[in-house]
Amino acid sequence: MVATNITWHHGAFTREERQKELNQKGLTIWFTGLSASGKSTLASALEQHLVSLKIAAYRLDGDNIRFGLNKDLGFGPEARTENIRRIAEVAKLFADSTQIAITAFISPYISDRDAARKLHDEANIPFIEIFADAPLSVVEERDPKGLYKKAKAGEIKEFTGISAPYEAPLKPEIHIQTDKVSVEEGVQIILDYLREKEYIPQL
Ligand SMILES: Nc1ncnc2c1ncn2[C@@H]1O[C@H](COP(=O)(O)OP(=O)(O)OP(=O)(O)O)[C@@H](O)[C@H]1O
Ligand SMILES: [Mg+2]
Image (cartoon, rainbow, N blue to C red; front, side, top):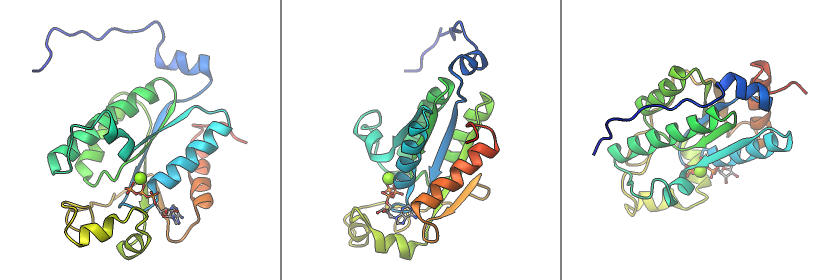
């Protein structure tokens, strides 16, 4: 059932006022890439780094969200789209509250990621898409959860890169080739970008 008769209730602060009070800018950092491309690894290292700098950052990660908020969703195209739609809404709420939301989902479809971006654009919240990129041969070799092995054996259906498509971003804000740079270098690339854009304080 779709809700009707609902009205947006404005708070006492605008986002700008809240940001000034809390001395922090809210934004969403959106990782995309194949399974084992390094999204969770980079997201977690980035979160740790930001929090150690006393910057409120919070990671929304694939499986964790599917344990709770999205446990009713499967992996078919429609469920993936709904999965990403909800994540985008939640990330936007975190960003609106002045935190740095870091999402780590395969998010294989360009249209879904563009919808997440649009949601942020419309609210005037920065959206930074990061392509965690490594060739299929490399991620299959890494296979930290043994998922590629299972997918190739036909034990997992609709697995991105094997039996479901992955649409690489055409113009991500940041492109990290995780087979060429270390995790630390990857995090540094992101921090440099955030500093250059003045989203986080200079050192
Ligand atoms: N430069 C790098 N950046 C990130 N991860 C790397 C790098 N080099 C090697 N790795 C390894 O690649 C693996 C990436 O796994 P990770 O769980 O981060 O992938 P993921 O993109 O989150 O996958 P999934 O979509 O299945 O959650 C880890 O075992 C990590 O140690
Ligand atoms: Mg992950």
